Image (tube, rainbow, N blue to C red; front, side):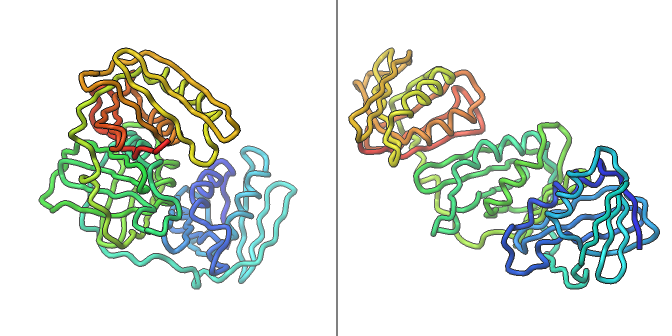
Length: 369
């Protein structure tokens, strides 16, 4: 069995798929691609048994075939070859020879029949979403997901999908991000609430572009799938009950501050240099027309920044502590010129969003400083 393909066709396909391959596998075969050729189309499949990625491209083959190749070695070989190199892969039994110009690589293969896959039911919901809007939604909330939290249900993102709305929620227990976009999808189906793993979210952010073309999102009882052009990502869901996030959003915060986003970001970056490396706390003092941001550390060093601020001081001056890293994450994804911070007092969480912005809001717990 033999196939021919240009490096510029093969390399993008295997680079897209290799992200599903873990560097340490419980099964050696999971370090491989499953390469399937049918009717002149090459399907490259990689999986870690929780997520799988299919990438497709055209190929010149002498018939239909199926075989495995070591994933990272194959990516390294293609990267090392010259641009527009013609690659020939010839498979015989449990070995493959890869040729390109004067280069020869002989590789031992795993049997294709032993390659595992994720067994999925039929999806319950199909919807088409503008690619750029979906990427923006995920990117604007993903940073609040938990990372290897013992509360496993926080290590992912909640999707609430109806025919009229797509909402994404992420929290690590100290901060929360909520984003939503309007949909106009035909169909009569109930709201779908699913927990999508962190790895899947980060991979979607990587592969999605800012374009206006639609991507197909499929939601099932135990999986989600996103189809884009010649790429398909399928992921198992996290089983568990997500916390009632509406209870922690401080809708009744009476004190409102308006701050220039760029000035705030720059001030936070500078003050953070001398913040406590472990706790990363900064104190924010709000008055009618000024915001003072302060930080100090155990070495008796301190930093202070003062910047213009519109603050409703009818309730008096207000001081509150926050994790500076959490604030910088928020102002980095907000796209508008002004940031709105709503506060109740120094003991309650703050609500952060873009001025007059629709679609995203952020909640940050206070710190005692």
